[in-house]
Image 1 (cartoon, rainbow, N blue to C red):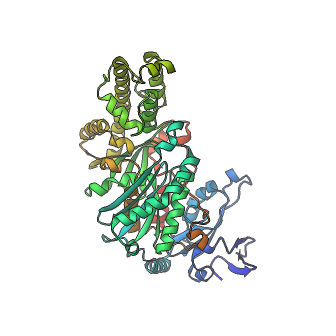
Image 2: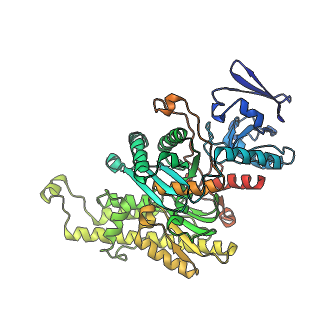
Image 3: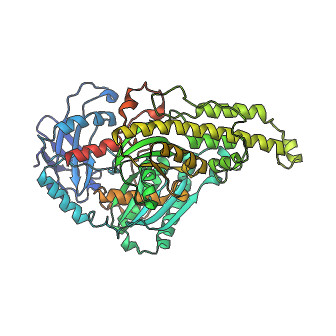
Amino acid sequence: TLDAGRWTLDAGRWTLDTGAGFRARTSSRSLAHLDGAPDAFAAVAVSMLAIERRSAIPRRATATVAMCCVVGCWTTALFAPTMVAFRRSAAVALASIQSHRTATFRGIRGVHGIGRSHALSSSSSRELLTRLRSKRGLHNCAGLDSVVLGIETSCDDTCAAVVTGDRKILSEKRKSQFEIHSAFGGIVPNLAQDAHKKAIEGVVDDAIRESGVAEADISAVAVTVGPGLSPCLQVGVRHARRVAARLNVPVIPVHHMEAHALAVQLSEPEVEFPFVTLLVSGGHNLLLLAHGVGNYTEIGATADDSLGEAYDKVARLLKLDLSRGGGPVVEELARSGDPKKFRFKVPMIEKKGNCHFSFAGLKTATRICVEKNIPETSFVENVLNSNTPSSDELQVKADIAASFQEIAIKHLEDRTRRALQWAKEEYPNLKYLVVSGGVASNLQVRSRLAKVAEEADMRIQCPPIRLCTDNGAMVAWAGIVNLREGLGLPPPELEDKILNGEEDERVDVNPRWPIGEKHPKYLNDKPIKSRKLKRNRMSLTEETRIRNAAL
């Protein structure tokens, strides 16, 4: 019998009766991941958070009943009707701390608890939490001598790396999927998932072998759980859990964008919080104010396409070789072009009240320019000319590439300049602008944004070019940083057929996982109707705030 009610076991099903007209049942199979259930319930703090039901419609329901159990530092939600209802109940849960002194609460992260944990507990519960954490070794594996394996499969590259707590990258492995997707003009999720499944074991094993460390010396396994392509994320999470179970080490869930933001600390240890970070990649365009680990304010985001997407589109329009990626080839071509030859409009130049990005209009303008200035050649002409464009055509392409890049970077400059002003209002002594993501490897982008930082009396810091694109090292380092905060899941206990890879484990990932809360000026601005700006998940920052407020 616990605070919340009475647990009974009947025919393999656990039943919780609160005595208040609510009964919940769950199969023993769904509780298997609680490690030691049912015996572990003797050391578990349970709270029932009953919120008044206002509507029977699930998507509008504000009612939810959450049975939350913590084993070690790992919390899992056993029941929540909808994610929306559960998120809305967060404020009520916080208000219930005083009456539920041994309660635990967290945002739901799926059936296997992949996500961050939050403990709302009294001093006695914190002692229990610390004791169980120590038993799992989470406090002892985050020092300078720690060794973390990082796994990244959020998009089209299968990556793994081994990094130490003192910032040494012992090994890095990457398997590209360019040849698979090049014919389609974009990433095909199902093909990407199949490629990840074929490559993941070899990439991870090679990373461990080349690191020169014994498997017994690995302290934890960090893995990207979102945002990204859901089928791809699942491959990485499943394999990370199998490796962690085999090595009996914790699993560290990592937010992909936080990994990009923290990657600079691998090469620049002096970069400390707070700082402003511009994350520009093939799937994201974000301006964030980083207050601390897991604590970010979103200043601006893309309303439609990211800059990386725009570079790829322009490269395809100009029929360039995409084997090195759209960004690098457009940048190289632009060096021999005239950036003032074609006059494109700077996106959203009239919107002075926000820091949002938009590149869809610039892509369209570039397409129209290509159609007007580069005539379509027939198949016969291509064969006769050996597919080699004339010098005049090459110059036109270079001018278009340079003109596109000039306006795209001007857009970045304009939004970043305003973001630094907003950030300086909160932190007058702000020192660093961190630029990360795949597009941060563009030297023109770096040099132009460096001048913007100088105008604000700040310095620009970027990760090494090899750490700008998706990689396992940034995930491993983010895992180390989070491990130092006490965040991690105990070693999974998996069935033999799952551990041996004979059957896929059911996991829940977060393909649309927001990283930060909106800046006050962001909220006051007229909202942009865009799916990319909508939220359907509790953000990383919201989860961190709930945990910190409770502890």
